[in-house]
Image (cartoon, rainbow, N blue to C red; front, side, top):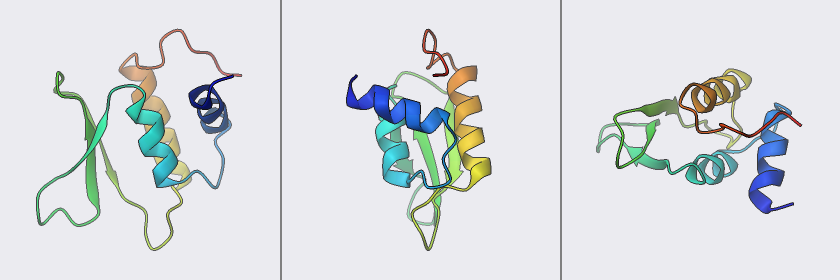
Length: 91
């Protein structure tokens, strides 16, 4: 099992300790990159692709690096809606 498959499996279990760094690695495998929305963006971050107008807009968690449960659900819904996880199953 590849490291991406392990990370995806962990994510699909909706863990309470999924980190921002893990999120960046996960969505990066689907071609999305982090784009801070300018100098005044604060903790607001976009994950986007070069060839698409579709993006995921999130607040970077602070002071801890752990995503909130609603953020994990938002990411899951986004990946399913955009077809990024097409062909991948819940394990």
